[in-house]
Length: 446
Image (cartoon, one colour):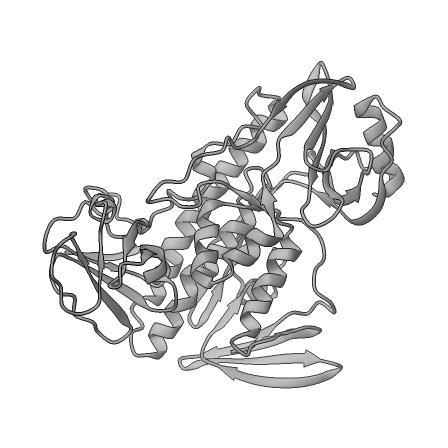
C-alpha cells in the first residue's frame, strides 16, 4: 500500500477541529483514542457578548453522561492537523509513511487494477495497484479524471474568514461570541484550540480586501466594541464559501472516491471531517476482503456511504440556513450531529438492532473475571461473532466469543455479561448470534 500527497509539507491548521462521538469510536478501534484524548479537550463553553457586554454562557452541545452502550457520547476538540499527525504516527507503526511532494499525474484502469503515473522529486514513476482510492479533496484529480459529476452548488453571496490566531487577553478555557444586539447571529466566534494559546477564528467576510491579521483585528474591534484584545500570530487563514456538492458516483471499477473528493459540506454541525474519516473506515476493510476472495462487499461502499453523505449534506445545509436566517437556536446542536445514529440498514427492516446498525458497546468480564468491553473484542481488522448463550464457532477472519450469563459454564473463548447490558443492547435471547463487521456495524443477526 502507498499513500501519496502532492503537498510539500503536512497541513498545519485547525480546520476540522470537532470530533464527533462516532468518530471517537472509530479512533478507539484504530488504537488512537488515548492519544486523541491526551492532545484534545472537551467542547468549551461559549461566552456570548452583545455590543461588548457579556450576556450569557452557552454550549453548542450539552454534555451527556456515558452509558453502557455509548461510552463516548460527547464531541471532542482537536485541530485537524493534530488528528492527522496522530493517525500518521499510528500508520507508521504498520510500516507505512505518507509520501509528500508526490503527485498523481494520470492513471489507466482495467479489469485487474490500476496503472498510476506519479511525479516525485522531478522524476516520473509508474505504479501498478489493484485499487486506487482518491481522497484528494474537493478539487479531486481522481474524480476529474474519471469524469464523475460533482453535483451541487457554490454560493458566492456568503463568505466567511476562518483562521487560527492568538488572543492572549481572553481566557483560553472559554470560547467567545461577539455580535451586535440587533443581529446576534451575525458576529465573530473565537473557539480555543488545545495544546497552546490559539483560537479558531470565524468572521463574516465582505471581500473588500485580502485576508490579513489587520483585517481580523478590525472585525474583532468592530463586533466586540473593545480595543483591549490584540490578535497575534495568525498561522492560517482562508476564505470559506458555502460549497455543497455530492459526487454522482463513489466508485468506477477499481477506483473509489472518499472524503471531500466525494462530498463537500458547510462547516456547520462539524460533519465534514468526521464523514470523510468514516468513508475510509467503511471502505478500508472491503478491498482486503476482495483480495482474500470475497469481492461482493465492494459495491456496498457506494450504496452505504453515498446515502450517508447525502443525509449529512442536508443536515449541514439546514444548520447553515438557520445561521444565515438568524434563528435563535442556530448555534444549538442535537444528537443528530453526533453520528451515532448512522445506519446502513434496509429501511424496511423491522426491530432494533437490525443488520446495518451501529454495534453497541457493553461492559463485561473476561474469562479471568477482569473488566472488558465489547469494543475491546471488536478492536482490530477482524469481524467478531457474538454467540449468546451457546458455544461460538470461529471462522477465518472472524473472532468468536460466547456471551454467557453469570454462573454459566462455557467452553472456549467467552465473556460474561455480568449486568445484562450486552443481552439488552442486542435484544438477544439464548441462541442468538450477531456478526459485527470490522467497521463496527452489524453484518448478520440470527
